[in-house]
Image (cartoon, rainbow, N blue to C red; front, top):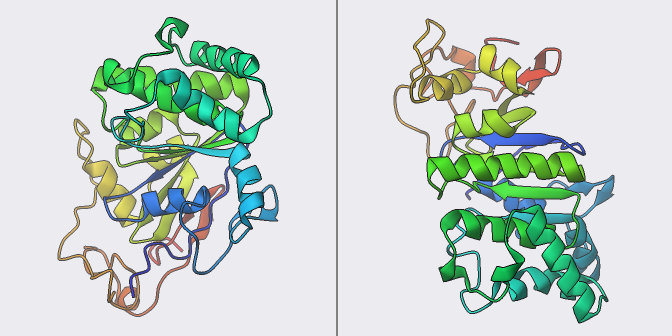
Length: 293
C-alpha cells in the first residue's frame, strides 16, 4: 500500500511562514490537503490550537475552515469560469457569516483593496484577468472569512517570474498586516527562501530536515537537502554538495531503512536496515540522518 505521507510532524506559528520543499511526488501537496482536511488521514492526528481536527464532524469542519483556508497552485483551474469576481469572493462570506448583501459587498471591496485589485472589476469573469490577477483573486477568496492560517500549495509556480515576485511580496505584506500564518509548499528553493521563516524538507513522505531558513541554506545537514541546494540554478558548486546516484526506491514497496539510501552516495550499512528518526543536531535544527546524529 502506498503511504504518501508518514511520520510528518510540523508546527506553524502565528505570523510565521513554514516552507515545505521537496521533489515532485514527495508528499508536499498531500500534506497541504491534509492540513485543510481536503483529505482525511488514515493514522495520526491534526491539531489546530490544541484541538484535534483529524476526524471532526461536518458542522465542526465548517467552523474549522473559517480559520484555515487554502490558495491552490493553478489560478486558471481553481476559479469557477462561470462566476464573476464578486461572486467568487463573496461565496465564502455568504457561507460562513450572516452578513447582509450590502455588508458582503463592503467586505469584498475591502478585501480586493488589500490584494491590489480594482473594485471596478467586480463583475468581470476570470478569463478577463491576467494570471497574476487571478492568483490575487484566489488570495482574496482565501482571506474572505478572515482565517488565521493559509495553506499555499505552489501558489506562484504557474506564474511568470516577474509576477511571482509581486504575489510573494503581497503575501508577505498581508502576513505583516493581518498576522497570518502560512504553510508555503513549493519545489522552488529560491521562492521558499524569499518568504519562509523556517523550512522543512520532505522526501518520500518523511521530513528529513527542518531548520530556520538561513540556517538550512548555510548549514544543510542531510544529503538530500544538500542535493536540492546543489541543483539550484545559478548556484556555485561547493565541496559539501551532494549528487544523488542510483534509482529511487518504489513508493509502493520501499526498501527497508532510509528512503534515500538507494540514491545516497554516503549511505552507511545501517542506512539500509533502519530508518533514522528526525533528531535535533543543533539548536532549532533537526535532521533524520545517521551521519549527523
